Image (cartoon, protein in one colour):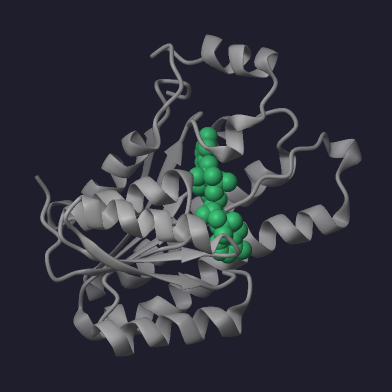
Length: 248
Ligand code: NDP
C-alpha cells in the first residue's frame, strides 16, 4: 500500500504496545525503523525480531525522552549512522490516573516530562535534519481523552491535549519546509497500559464505544502509516481519531 523505502523512522516507546505495532508497520512499508525504549531492552529486541520477520530492518536505541541531552545525542547519532531522520513518531507516554484532589505535584512533573517535554525535545532535535532534507513527518500519539476528557485522568488528559496544540503550532512553523505534523488520538487500545483496568471500567468504556470492542495497536499503526506516507503530503496540523467512534 504505502511505500517508505529509503526513509528512516524513529518511534519513541517502540518496545511495547502501540509503539511496537507502529514500528512493525513502518518497517513493513520499507522504512528503516529505530525502536526507542526507556528500560525494557528485551521488549525492544522482540520488536526488532518482529520487524525482521515482517521483512523489514531497524535498530534498537535506549534513551529517556525526558532527558534533553540524551535525546540530542540519540537523534544526532541516528542521522550520522543512517543518513537522515525522515519520520518521528512521538509515542512514548505514561499515565498516572488520579482524581484531581489526590494528584501529587511529582505526578504532574513526571507525566509532563515524558508526554509533553519529551515530544518537544524529540521534535526539536529532529527538525534540523528534516529541514535540510526539505521533507519530514512528525506524528504525535495523543489520546481520545485529550478531546473528550475523562474523570480520573486530569493530568494525563492535559498532557495529551498539549500535544494537539504542539502539533498545530509546528504544522504552521514547518509546512513551507516540506514537514507535516499531525496527531493521532487513539481510543481504548489493548496494551500493557490498559491491561490492569478493573472490569467495571472496561465495560463502561465498551458501552461508550459504538464499534463495540477494544481497539488493536495495529489499527493505530495503520493511521500512523498513512500520515507518514508521501500520499499524506497535504495533511498537516490535523487530529485523526482512531477510537471506534468513542468520540465523534
Ligand atoms: P505501554 O505502556 O504499553 O508502552 C509504553 C512505551 O513507552 C514503552 O515502550 C516504554 O518503554 C515507553 N516509554 C515510557 N516512558 C518513556 C520515556 N521516558 N522514554 C522513552 N520511552 C518511554 O503504552 P501504550 O502502547 O498503551 O501507549 C503508547 C502511547 O499511546 C502512549 O503515549 C499512550 O499515552 C498512548 N495511548 C494509549 C492508549 C491505550 O489505550 N493503550 C490510548 C490512547 C493513547 P519501556 O518498554 O522501556 O518501558
